[in-house]
Length: 259
Ligand SMILES: [Zn+2]
Ligand SMILES: [Zn+2]
Image 1: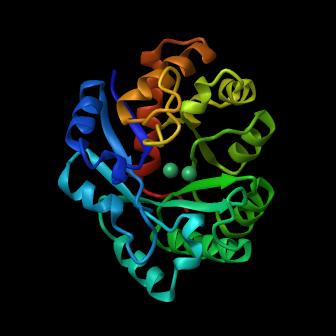
Image 2: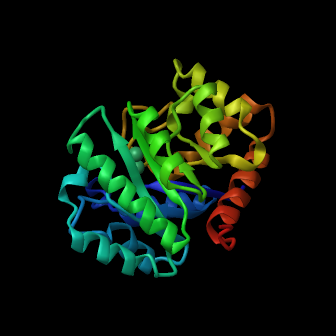
């Protein structure tokens, strides 16, 4: 089984003691590619993912300002981001979006920084990785107004209605550990209706570990649990999910942009 973890925070401090071992276990589990999300601790540092991607051939990176860190962004942040987007190993802009749950940055600033990054992604011809929490309406509105490319709804936790809206916008739905949580029936309903060619899987490690590791540190190797659950939900073999999500990732990230 060959898998891609489309979203992990391998730069996280929680991996400082055993990062090599974590990466080894991922490879052992068949996770042949990982996308290291580059948001890190926020600006001025934009290279949290890229530093790792430069070290390992099977790691790729995103660059972006997380909505939590939106108020740390300056004009220089976007200049630097534009330069980094030219690097081959930077596959996407992310994770970007809106988080009205924590409100770590003022909502108006979050929206402004989100739109600015959509523009940069458009210019670079790269997809976006969207983080949205308790801000679905505004997220969709801004995407409709400012985005015509592809992308990923990371850690998709909506139900069927939200899934249809995201799919209509041309997005891929990336499912993570939440899919395995006992109360996540709505998410599983969404996972059932997504077309084969729009499915992705992720860990969001070190966060949101799937059952039976729920509540503990997550790591890319644990993606296998999510794949098994997704397979059961869709009534197919885990190998089929692995095959689909791997080819979907390749098509989204390595095919020339259609715009
Ligand atoms: Zn996120
Ligand atoms: Zn994340």
